[in-house]
Length: 592
Image 1 (cartoon, rainbow, N blue to C red):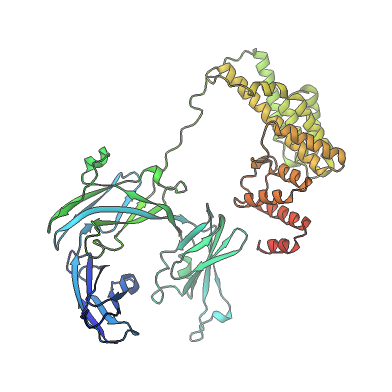
Image 2 (image 1 turned 90 degrees about the vertical axis):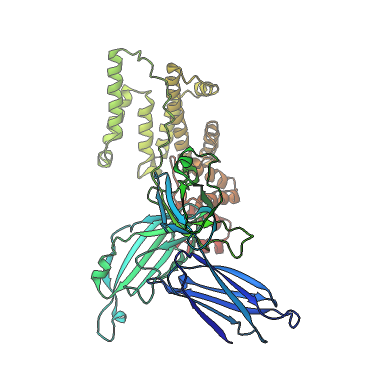
């Protein structure tokens, strides 16, 4: 197949060229299609040829015309090749026309920092009159991460010794970790090392991606590629090799960039003057004709905070592209530079959300006498110091003796009773002291007037009344203590044996449901799972566990938070009870 090669130099001011290919056959002689190949390339210093090469396949009927717009760099020779596809048969002729066009921006790579309010770009048309209609869209988001720890350079084995000079090879292994908020893809980028192969200063580099359970997700090497990851923790291990350890020492704290596509593109508005931009409204830049040799200014506005992804942190980068020609459908080709010009936005600091307590009512006057205030302060200090005892002091029996003395002095003080409940519930030998935990919880429950709580929270309260605000805070504390005591009692009963404990567990759960919804609140998931399993509702329990595993158990707080490992173990136990041993074994195997 004959190939026609042309060499042209784009003139100053050209940013793209329209290549028109017309099939030269006569429609009266032939009606079949011909497949042509159009290939263009510019060799840009320090850039891979593929970054500035285009290859297009054109299927044309006789006398049919096809126009393609291709980005070019002015002043650098461009090779344009056209040929008939290897499998196409019959005589073929084609006419090729090249037209250089362009609107030249200054600067060509535009950047903006959060707080700048705008980015100024001056554009000019040097070749011909062009229709100017600026457009800018942000399409991707990059966030930087540092290694979890400084990398260590180590020598590799005997198989990595170079046979021609007996020189060994060294490696640097760096570990990175970040959180994937939702299931999706990301691209790890190491700018000093990637996008070069044979010209690379280093021997090789490799990035392996794993999830929080060490399951392999994907890799990338000299060329960045997208990796799909589930929601949760993602761990990246990067290996760099070189025969000179000092070269690897330079990369021991290298920053890695995690790039993601934006769920929704962010468009920035263009204005013709600074005044129009500051005023805003409908005074945006209108489409206009840019005469040959003339220049105009374009002001791109800063994206509003609501358009920036909520997960972005100060210093993150949003990337996109901007075009300046109109790109109308009536024009041949694209009518603008394909791919546009790069644009970078550096995310600035976020505004702190106003506190919800700014309009709190003032504290009411303390009606206690001076003696009462002193005695209450002494009591609160004693309880606070009791809770601050070290583990060694508690193991030495200091807590028990001090609590007994304080209980005789303040038998109905709820914070003191709660301190004892938490102490007993947190003992290493808790299983041997379940009866004491239940007894301590009953003491707290007995001191909290649940009927008064129900009456209090059954109606709205004036938030501007200091006395009512103070009383509401006191009742909130009592409600919190009552709920925690019921939860700890229910957990202790769940670990106890016998029908009596089972009945008390069900009754305690009913009392707790009067105050909280244990089915929707992750803080009480352990109790909901216990209830479902006791009732034989294993399918419902599995559904709850699978839902919580999507967030790695982060929703399970409260008295007994469940980690991801706890949830996986509970799922394995339920699968075993159901007799699904194959699923259980597969579930355990997939954790590592």
